[in-house]
Image (cartoon, rainbow, N blue to C red; front, side, top):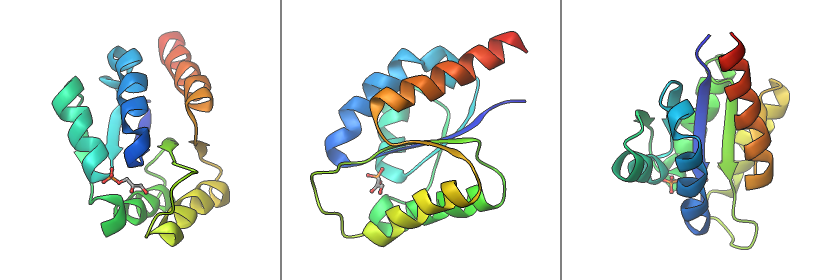
Length: 128
Ligand SMILES: O=C(CO)COP(=O)(O)O
């Protein structure tokens, strides 16, 4: 089955997301990708990844991805959060991470964990 992956990064983590996605670009190109608005815009513009873009996070994008996840349409979330900057939509962020826990969906909130999740999904695809 094609992995369905959500990619989200706060502003100060967007360069990390681009670097991470660049490393896995060949794999991610074969996945079904969704992203919040600005993150998705950069993934499309800088890496040419096929991303379905939702609204920007502060305008409900995290909630849109959370709703998809609740409907069983997301297999893993890469959510590079900025732990040092207050976000106006903190409740939305918490709701998305909580939805991952409620529905037992893998949720990587830092680059180290994201590598583990993506490399595992890539290996599983190669073995299939
Ligand atoms: O705010 C975000 C996640 O909480 C990310 O939204 P953008 O990708 O639109 O910047």
